[in-house]
Length: 156
Image 1 (cartoon, rainbow, N blue to C red):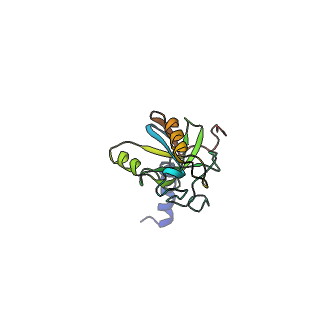
Image 2 (image 1 turned 90 degrees about the vertical axis):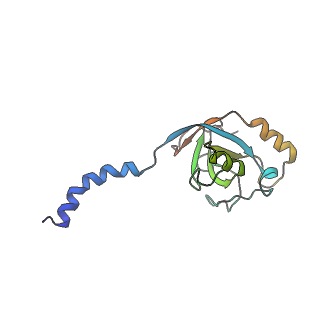
Image 3 (image 1 turned 45 degrees about the horizontal axis):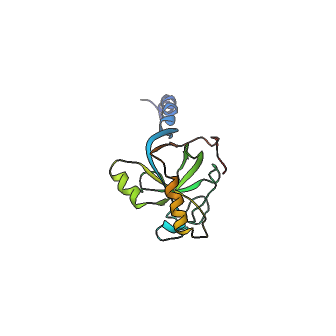
């Protein structure tokens, strides 16, 4: 009868092979609906987010770098809470920090949808901001899940 030590030694190479399979690899998701939201059209209006990520204390924001990703909203369960993605269309990183009713409807119908934060976390931009958000909205784009932290970032 084999001892526990012998069994552990036999299983060690198999366990080493299995561990990379459990890590989430960088992947691209195509045809993701991209929209924008901010202070005036958040629900309720303001900068509050559903999830506290990165020490922001449930306040939307971000510059788009890996260390300071933009807030994005989506359907609960579509992304892991506080998951960072890369948005090639904008050359910015974004983090799942909020929920979005339309995103949930779309996800339940088999469509991925992200709603990216724009504008100030302290000032309501009103109808001018909403017009700007609508003008920024592209056709469906790709995103990168589990991205490396060194992709190009547009700091504007």
